[in-house]
Amino acid sequence: MARLPFPAWVKLAGLGFFGPFLAGLFWPVPPAGRDRGLQVRQGWVAPWAAQEARVALVIGNGAYRAAPLKNPVNDARAVAAALRACGFTVTTLEDATRGQMRDAIRAFGGWIARGGVGLFYFAGHGMQVMGRNYLLPVGTELTREDQVEGETVGLDSVLAELETARNRLNILILDACRNNPFGTGLGGGQGFTQVDAPAGTYLAFATSPGRTAADGNGANSTYTGALLRQLKIPGLKLEEVFKRARAEVLTASSQQQTPWETSSVVGDFCFVQGQDTVPAEPAVTTVVLPPTAVPSVPAPAAATVVLPPPPVPAAQVGGLQVLVDAPGAQIYVDGSLAGSASPTEALNLPGLPAGVVRVRAEAQGCSPVQQAFGIQPGQWTQARLVLRPSPGPAFAAPEEGVPMGSPPAPPGPPPFRRPPFRPLGPRADLSLPRPVRRWVR
Image (cartoon, rainbow, N blue to C red):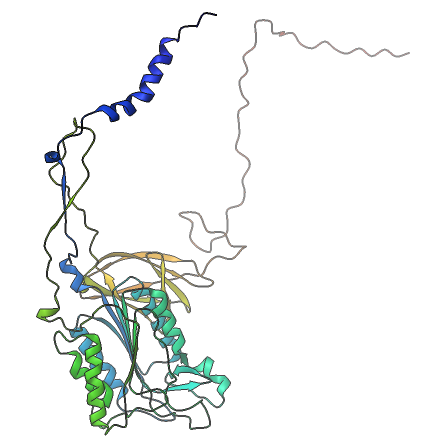
């Protein structure tokens, strides 16, 4: 039986399929002198790395009814001033209520979730009940242990914000292990119980677990005064700051008060950068790529490495204060929940990058409103949002040009519509219909 010849298109298809494979086997490899080189900077730290965002929330409560304290407000003011000098954007609360503390803590958690370094400082009364630690707001009245959860702020809520933020570093400082203002009949013991630090968090307590801290006889407490003197030293690392403060407190209290720290921090941090804390740029390493198999394409001498956009430095951030006229309004900034505001309590949002942000307010029974505001570096911008009541189910929005409250116009007759024109055909019968005859029998 004679073989049928292959069509021409079958031969061309086989050549196109196996041709590149055969060319790769027999094509000469270019010499080593034509290899491409790629320069990569390994371990390079950009100048903006030392200016990462730093956000702090500082609270000082001293105007307690049961046992007032004289130094927490002074401590909060001094710590806020020192942190601002270190490049932090600070929000300060003095003699705050439970609602103010909870709103500020939620907003603080939203800002540290953007990255950088977060610091939480509290000075005032603290207590432990059934193995849990609580921070006492101003105006707290407790008579039974079952009231603690609803009248105070749990330390667990602060730690949860730090853990879910997943930023590089968080520092929590509590000068709150003072005596129990409600006596020995309420609470599980003196001071705080031991707490484990979440990932990337440094916890610092004014005294060891189960012990109380002194309020101090000067303008600041014993612990805060020592801490303020140490964190101002340039080039001093985070652990060294608290180690020196602990030694100073032990000497001032005659070994009666021992500050306590627990840490899960990886890496270094300095409140004030020194000359030896800025990393030097290492040498350039050359990475040789394998030779190319296509000699007709000229190889470039070097490739350009595109770096990611740097984070916003602390010097290019501002603050936004949101005011609303509806209670319980939820505030969203660029689509993310930032906190809540009411006619009596404004929402302060520090650490916003300079530029334009979209602020949206939503409240029950009101129509949501959204506006854009410009953030200026180093300044506070006030955003005032007016929420109007939303229309009910039987209310219809008036038409454009009709004043609010006027009765609706009565419905008129339907518009006249001319019937469609239908042309007659060539065989159209134009005669009148014939009359119908009825036969009567």
